[in-house]
Image 1: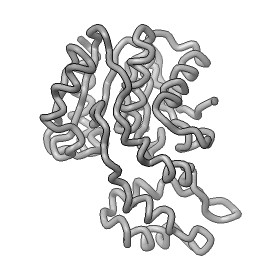
Image 2: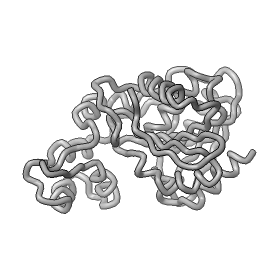
Image 3: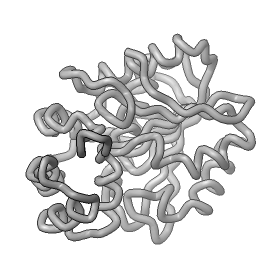
Image 4: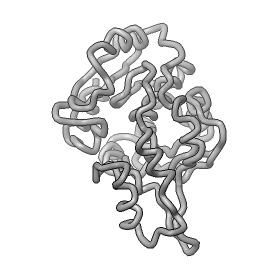
Length: 253
């Protein structure tokens, strides 16, 4: 599978993997800043953004997608950065291909399994009647019955595509809905040796709890964890300056 990506900058390769319902667009501001010092590849993972759709959707497959992407573009010893679902993919890739990367950054996700918690979002997205939408405002009004947070709705509705035939989804909504339990799956495996690994979590997020620290250290020996104060799950969007500062401190070591 050939994944869609955005490329910018020169230097050490750095690959960004977006989270569930996201795309490379969500990381454009951060990618531009990182591109001042790195050769950045911001990737749309399968069933997201402008990348191909597939009925196969699990972490081992997406880790292999990343390996294929690295081979296709002759990338050597990259830094891998993944947020949420992308962080799970990055972790699985790091464990499966331990000698093929330089540094790993996992944003607001732990290597544990999570219960399904996107029920309301998926119900809202699946109940949008695309054939009757006259505008994105109509979509927002309908979705607000299921997702009260305006910022979350704006994020989700970036997945709507509009052309002369009307509205359609960029994401593979049926497959994401069918496989939502797989999205919560825990990491399969661990690193045998210590390598540079950074976990970044948002203070207000709740995705990484103190009870997860032992598992993180066991799975990625010698890894570091930094909590960004005042940030929720979308750490990079909510606290971009602190996020970049934290990244640079780790990358420059």
